[in-house]
Amino acid sequence: MRFNTKCIQAGYTPENGGPRQIPIIQSTTFKYDTSEDMGKLFDLEASGYFYSRLQNPTCDNVAAKLAALEGGSAAMLTGSGQAANFMAIFNICENGGHIVASSSIYGGTFNLIAVTMKKMGIDVTFVSPDADEEELNAAFKENTKVVFGETIANPALTVLDIELFAKVAHEHGVPLIVDNTFPTPVNCRPIEWGADIVTHSTTKYLDGHGVAVGGAIIDSGKFDWMKHADKFPGLTTPDESYHGIVYAEKFGIEGAYITKCTAQLMRDLGCIQSPQSAFYLNLGIESSHVRMPRHVENAQAVAEFLENHPKVAYVNYSGLKSSKYYELAQKYLPNGGCGVVSFEVKGGKEAAMIFMKALKRCAIETHVADARTCCLNPATSTHRQLTDEQLEEAGIPAGLIRMSCGLEDKEDLIEDLSQALDLI
Ligand SMILES: *Cc1c(COP(=O)(O)O)cnc(C)c1O
Figure 1 (cartoon, rainbow, N blue to C red):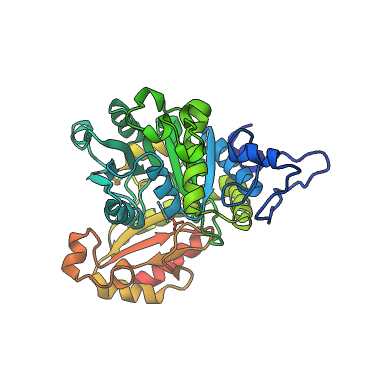
Figure 2: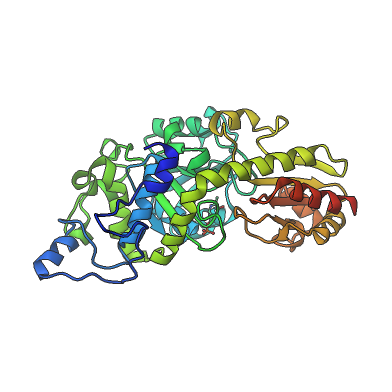
């Protein structure tokens, strides 16, 4: 199957006379004829369903589609993007471990790594997303277990040099995890560039309609855990909580990581996606290859309009030739990145407030990446506790607007921006 066909048909094949659409298996539990049958499942001797906290057929069908789209060997859904990133890292980096992470990542993930995982005894070194090989090498420690970054960072819109980050990670014997939320597999497939594990907040473009919070983890099945056995004892030594199974031996290079993450972390943490949410997610994925190009087309048109506007100080969009990330975007995102653009209106907080108030088509929301266009002025909303000086230091000027271009006619979006800018 080619990519667009996979968006529609991968992950679920109906049986003769079976439902055409992925059925929503709204059942917590599954029935067996004998205790022996069920015992085999608990021992991971046979595959099958017994309780939806571990696995559910609807979620598995959608996860299998995502594995096919990203070019991975196995995948699982989680209750949110936060859960996906936490479990993806924690599956291989426990108490005493160390993470090398790009500093340009989603605020929630930054906090997860810098504060919450720190409390669990996991250390981190943040590096610039623009770090060269030497700077990256210097960030590694004896106990480094993983490297983490975002293909296109939310909200800074920096573009990650995936090949470089993967090369350096592999030289140090650890995998690269890439959060691919903003481009989706439609616009970038990090595994093709050397990433080992991909994560998503499916809440964003994959859902695409702002209906269900969710996440996903996809394993490339290419990282050789046994080759670096001493670094990853959780995968390469017996799991006493599962009858002494050695995941890397029993499930091999393609299955070990996701099986451990399901059998151990999902069992114990329970942050599942509901079958109903997975069903909605699948509807979004089916049209993702049609929607993403339109998000990109609208964002490119909006960015070009804003770049030439006298009341705009600068525009941040990697599809603009003036962008610092234009070259990297041409390489990793040749069909465009995503629909999110950020720009600074001249005149600071006051100008931004006038502008935001005047918007008619663009809604004021903290969300991004859905069919409806929305705008946010961090200085007067998410970051309103900061002074103008603190905002400047954080790289968030008071006049900064983040705009997520939806699927409306681009002319309507530009007209709305134009009338609002005129009022400043
Ligand atoms: C939104 C987002 C997250 C967090 O996802 P939730 O589904 O809100 O938990 C993680 N990474 C990126 C890049 C995001 O945009």
